[in-house]
Image 1: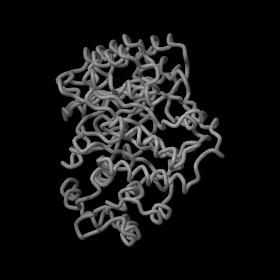
Image 2 (image 1 turned 90 degrees about the vertical axis):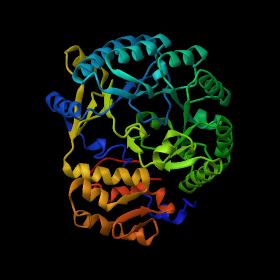
Image 3 (image 1 turned 120 degrees about the horizontal axis):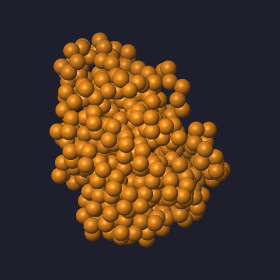
Image 4 (image 1 turned 45 degrees about the horizontal axis):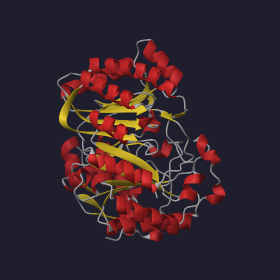
Length: 453
């Protein structure tokens, strides 16, 4: 499989959404409590299973590349008042949803969820289990910083029902780590992975970033060799987007140390070729998995989905977002919580849900969302499927979009037949560009997105 065509990648090198949702979160507007609860009513009528997302915003050190919504502090006492409000929010949300509905997914993200003590992680998990109806075989994951994690932590995660962990690594090169203020040894990471496997956490994901300061193809080769030795089930290979005007910690990165655009592409190409040679399956965008992983299996069965946590195997779930800045997807709407912790506390203390914005999607949004999801998850699109689902004539409805794809078709990124679109191998890396042609909001957007490659 030849995915990497340098000339085409340079030609289509532009900024664009990651399509963890459609419409994308930058389009969210003010959303009232009543509007959200109306979507919960729709959700309860449909009886879809539930996915729970809990945001833990605290980190004890700042990684200079980070663009997440976080609070950097070494004061562990800040966790308890946050959990107090989070528990109240869990009770508020739990009262809205039919208890017969099953929780198939749970994810703790951040920030750094392991900023919480072991006892606090167990309490939070048990609180969720006391309010919601968990399945016995669900997918329960947590993001872990290997620094400071020991055997007791892994024991606590297993007790809290987690069966999947995601480890931030980014790069094992010490010079790169120092440049981004995240020094983390290979040995630390391996120890956490070995313990996780010993305690029955069945899936381990590793996050890597290319384009960081002091990186080169040669340095990243060594990191990838070490990753191959660890053999994680999933690998996310993120493109570092240097946006210091949006993310304050990035102002501490020396831009003169960043790899050139050509070197960055060379790192990505080497990484892609290496991971494929190691037997990993290219899922899409920046995700790889072992062929026996549920992500690869879901893709082969055309059951893959994409949401705010990335690619997912549970397309049918409604997502309840809990905690500071958390995003949910319930009924026909998206919602996002307050991003300021003082205001989040005020809303909870006042007996309100902390939801401040979101979007109720219309019929056009639903049509375009299915088109984008099929393309970004499966690299092909059936016109007949869209027509039968929404009672439209695809060629008429998307006449402008099909015209917009014509140059991409000429460049061999995709093939358009009279009833389908099929993304070719060298178009797969540019799938965001292809999806952008169907995005009705993009032309009006003022958001600064990351580069598509």
